Image (tube, rainbow, N blue to C red):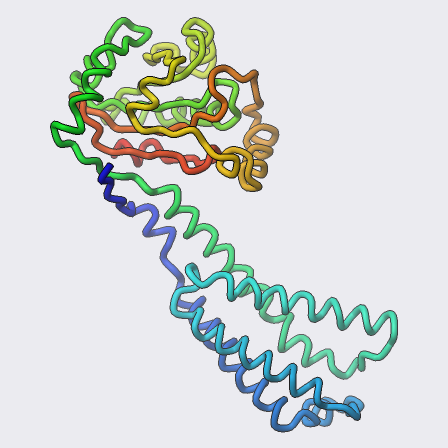
Length: 331
């Protein structure tokens, strides 16, 4: 399928890097390069300047200076795009965290760490904790927004649309209309759920109920596709405030396949991020979890459909993806 991924305005706003982040990384780069060069050329100077005992073997400090100088070059390069080059910032932050931990450990256990070196530790490590952490938080938000905003405009040629339109003419919703009839009456946001016991699908239904007034105002109807028994699914949707929302039971997954929704791999269903998001959605946000109904490996998705054609699409890469349905529908 010739999907053309388009970055939405919301993702662009989230992905904008504040100018101070690039400036902070450049300052860190210049500082590290100067400090590293100084440590290589005159390893005794920091100790003399701070009034600390000068070690007899300064070779280790020269090696440390070379490493710090290389870090400085990395920070300078990362400044061009902090969100993209976040691994460099992460490695740098880890070094700035473990360095002080090692210093404190040495000071408490062996008492070989001169107290006079604390100013150097503060300037080299501690003052960078906050800016580096903020940069990493921004990078996570920017990359997450880009990943979750991969709304695709779809090839709507007759050759592509005909098979889907034919199947939509056969799929009948809970209100008696076919999916094709619903889409002929106006744009329809067709949301495919994994199964109604899935924590993330319960979260999706709650999101749709919350966004329904905006979708209604934009004349976009909601259609839910699931693999459960129709009466049971209808009762659940009613408890969530979607009693009048048409839904279609598709236990053999013919619609899922027609809309090119795949079965997920283990990482997409049970990866670390899925567990973290699942704990939050299930326990903290209270969406809970129910029994498995249907194919637990089926991946979800959401589509804006009109007159039998898919206009926009969001296919989950992870079961924990949480698309903005109003953004997808242009509401």
